[in-house]
Length: 293
Image (cartoon, rainbow, N blue to C red):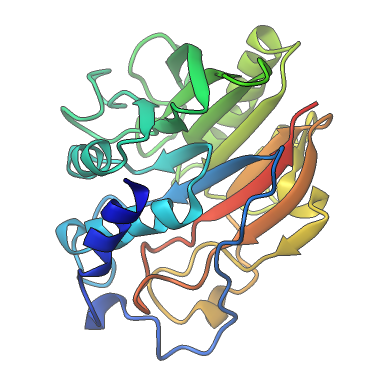
């Protein structure tokens, strides 16, 4: 079934001048094989609008093919619009998902923009899930102070159907306008993790809209480890390229996978290879293979 879906999308688009990355000379990193006993965590800002004039309908195929190439066990997505969600829901048959529109709290396929989590339902059972808003009033759609947008955080608790082991995946997208909102958001998310998931391994994925030099990153890594630095095998590159020459932002990391410090990180990759020599988004997706305690 996986190969049939992949074959369908392989017959899709060729060169598209707006999002073509083949002319740029930068390291090309592609997905590798997953080792037995590991859990593959992926983070992917799929871009809610155009990439250099190439709109979502012309990128749906390569976005889906990128996910199928990686085949993560759980995947945190940022900037998922209903157009994306309907296509992903249809094409990613092996996956279940959880997510709400950040503006209204409606299901992610209905309206708005969401931060959904997809999980491989053949391997994992969904034990519990939820969403909260990254603000002082987390139970209702609301903005943090100075924030340019309403921001939401999604989480799932997954149980391995074979081993019975469990972990929690938390996914969000911090504000792009306000440093205050990002810092407060990090405080809200870390507090939620501490209060609700103290005795279970946690992985966190996000477009944090700040680098590892930012205060929000410092807050998030007080109790969580950055998979990029913890990985025994690391192939990495800046994660936000804006659809332009990636060499201009080779050290610009704003997308992260963080883990509980008792999780062993085997592999971390920034996927720069693209699909059909095209950028899949204005961000490069990232993934990490980890071993749960």
